[in-house]
Image: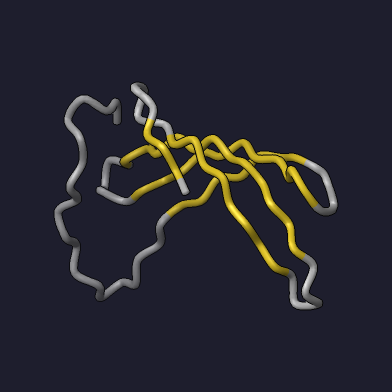
Length: 81
């Protein structure tokens, strides 16, 4: 579940179950970025709140197949790109 903040970041809470059935919960702040070619990159700061513990940062970037058509991306014009 996520809530959008005024700066267009996402404040998220999530649940995860490992392959061996261990339940974990976590929280994450994600800041989406629209790249010049229209792809999406998300910068994340996260931490586990139940389970193994730990925290970190991640960068997730959209990749496209070479022959995949490029579709215009809808976004809130008030968000910084």
